[in-house]
Image (tube, rainbow, N blue to C red; front, side, top):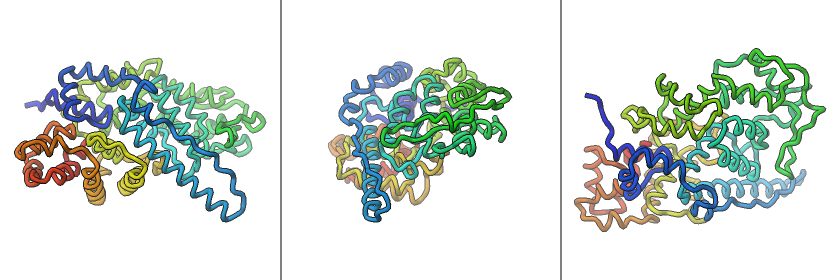
Length: 438
């Protein structure tokens, strides 16, 4: 007998993957509207200032931190200010994820942050990281070529991958290598010779920190012919990106990256790959690709539903949204401390490959950190829907509050023992396996 996924479980899955989960009333509305209509609503929701939650969380404005020179005291003060700005930036984005009425935009931006993974720990500039974040948000649903061009010209990425100061006399290969391996083509679709030639194409850029932009210095650029992927031309950063994103391997790589993070780990089923590549098309349309992915029957089926573990940011943001908690300034240190314990702080990916996915997040240490967070969250959240329910119905009321379509028998039995203590019940539910699954 082939396993099936109920209509309610499908929309619950959709709201988790295309956002950060939904409360019971949101699941009710999605189930009533139907799966396809809900996908259309998620993709067509008002964005930018038209989203009241986004309008309520404008980006921070950071004062310029003056170069400290050699004075030790001034350097320490500058480092403290940078750390404060980094915490403010991460706290702002968490709050926007919580408050956004169109969470798919923030979820998509989070995906691209992991794809073009850049860390403030090396960039050391909140303004540059914020500018990159805004680029990912603005361009993450359009033509992948437009996004790739913007990111190759992104100052934060250039600092992160040592592109600043790469000259025709001493080309740095970091950006060229990662541009091919992680960002556009995937392993096995280029050679070391291609990397060296691409590094020459990317030479000549300097950073204007005061203006937060890259400046091109023609005298430092290698303008001689280069052979890349079998084609010879005077490639520069623009023509190099055009070459890479036009490769069939690039189309397959973008589909694979999105499938692995939005749907399931591992190879993309052949029939799914064909459908998604068709949607992506010659125009490299990222919104069309995501639309096709969310509607794909395999995405809605038993091999994908529950196939991913929630990343820490997804877990924390989803819990805050479910419990109606809008973080204030005092909460930010607790939330960032929780995420640091869990191993995922916005703007601090561990390396250029981004964060891991799947079962890597399901460790004993992570379980304790989630439980500690849950105990704090229930002191701040709205538990009225659970506490007002009869004791016999509170376990189901908790599932509804958290946007889950049910519990296993084992979890239900454990939660039922805490039914007389609503705060304890909800905290345990937040730490339960069912809530850890995305």
